[in-house]
Length: 349
Ligand code: GDD
Ligand code: MG
Image (cartoon, rainbow, N blue to C red):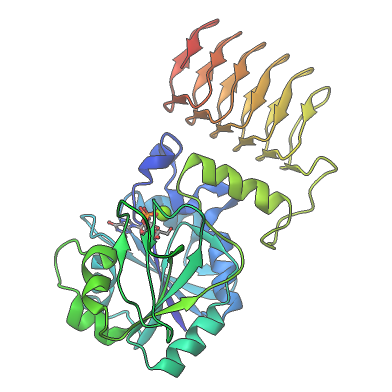
């Protein structure tokens, strides 16, 4: 089985983290995000994954290479952003597409049963089958009402007003190559959600009711939520055991005299000074935090340095290599760009 993973978006909602690391390989609970997705695909019989990259494609290839746990990885690189369907057309034009394939949004953490989706696709003779998951708030997704037999009745991408169903597009499709050949033009950006799927309504497009864990990690809130969920063991994953505070401490970390947890991820070679508290936060690799600091509900990218007595409040994102002076206060939800130096005592809102 072949899967094509859409991994070329700019990850704007996760800036500044995605200014230095592409979203598909952003560390999630200490592993490149796509590692979770590739484990999941492999568990459903996928032997080859085509990674569709554009924005910062080298960053993806450098991290994942050409083989992952026996699975072949191929890269299709676009020079201009081609949207969600355009990259699949490019892969077709480059001769790499199988007759039937899975297409995945490259920012979804899930354990849903792709094998069952494939079985339904086969049974109905669909041209394309979309995994649909129930969510509470449908606003930032594609809403997909279906008939009793699973036939898709409409595809409403991020539309306003009351939603006709709480089932949304989960970003996991089974597609026949013929659909790409006939419904996706070559050489320009094309959106599955806005062009291709609406056109396929009542023309071979089916929905499959997915269950289980599902999270799009593309916003800071959901990135953190997915982190906490992984730490607590749902979904299941290959993570190392967590400590008694439910935290994951990377190799070579120095934390003597610091209070770490609950629900913290420390990347490799981080240090946290004495009497500092880090809770419900993610530190990527080589982050250094001084003494008497408070960090809560935040994400600090690689090599961030934090001076003594600093406070970083909920929802803050600090870009790679930023340096926060002593006594700095980073307000809730603030974002600091990579490499920026914040002066001692300064407050960043
Ligand atoms: N190669 C390539 N080129 N990939 C792209 C491009 C592009 O130009 N633009 C976006 N992508 C990739 C992103 O990296 C991501 O993995 C995937 O396509 C979806 O893009 P997002 O930007 O994350 O879309 P979204 O989350 O707002 O909405 C999509 O996902 C929802 C579920 O999470 C839609 O498919 C919705 O219908 C869906 O409900
Ligand atoms: Mg997304």
